[in-house]
Length: 201
Image (cartoon, rainbow, N blue to C red; front, side):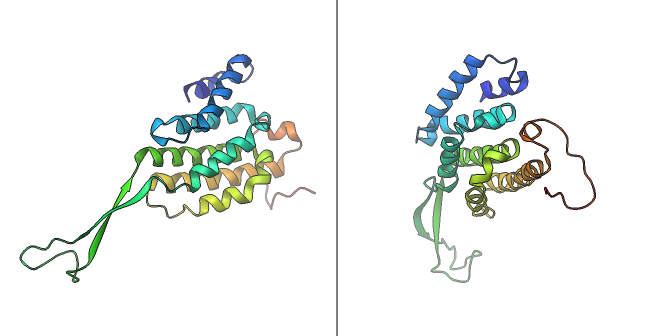
């Protein structure tokens, strides 16, 4: 991820092309790992999230691989597991928890590394939608359907990134449909607001 931040700070023209290629190759290898505890996938998502800001449409060759891994992390629920089911403890024959003395409680075990990976995947999806909107178009329906499922997720950081990503998708589409050409889509030109609905003829 640090390499991605460094590349994004320096810019594509100043960051060594060979280094970018090597880091990208390593990032793709990290995405192939399946153990969330190693945090390699989370870090790789962070890297691709940052380089999308400078690579833009040049992300096209590796985009399908990254997107497939993003969806895998977003839809994965292996990190949330039910634990033991226990009866509520009552003292003196009275419980403040419930009127039902026989009601049972189920523990939920959540892997924090799993949550961090999911959060990083959603964040990366948002940056790809914002900085690579043309490439994202063919995958947009799958992306939106996946993150909408997490709109009321149990962890607030996931919900936050869902909201942020939906905003980034909106601005990515705005850039896509108001840009004059592909170079304009990849540029950092600011959107000039005009009254009315922006439409391409």
